[in-house]
Structure formats: C-alpha cells, structure tokens
Image 1 (spheres, rainbow, N blue to C red):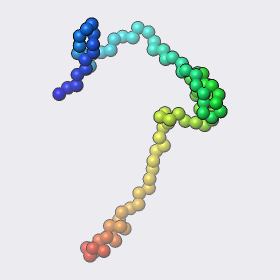
Image 2: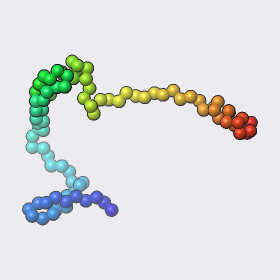
Image 3: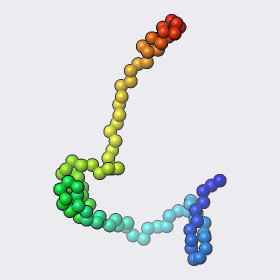
Image 4: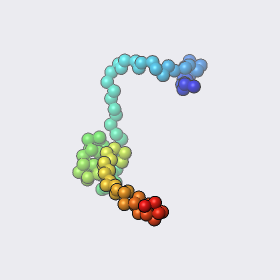
Length: 93
C-alpha cells in the first residue's frame, strides 16, 4: 500500500500529491542570522554566523553533527594460521 498524506484546507482534508512538481520560487531563499548566544569557552557573545565560524576556527573546535568522519582502515590478520591450528586440534590434518 502506498503512503498517502493529507492536509487540512478550507475546512476539509485534502490528499497531497506527493509526486507533483514543486511550484516555482518567487524569490531567493534567505536564511535568518542566528540569535546571539554565549560561547562555552570564555563566555563571550557570538552574534552572527561569521563570528560563529571564526570562533570555531580560532579555538580548533568542531560543531557536533557537521564533522566528517575519518576513514577507518584496519589491517586484518590472516585467518589462515588460526584455521590450520583448529584443524590440527580437531584432527582434520
């Protein structure tokens, strides 16, 4: 069964067409600046995105959730020796 979504419009439920194209934008999307906050390092106030980025950079901090995970490369031991030992122990060799 396909998923369906409904919205309340003009006093009744109307099904939303999930595959309909989005309407054309009437203008650019403008993201508001952040609300000022006190940083946890020295209690100073951060009042803009640029000061937030500069603060993170100057203090070598990484915003949680935005970091890129480091690739993990593990050298795996060959199982050959363990297999041979177990085969000897079981009398298979």
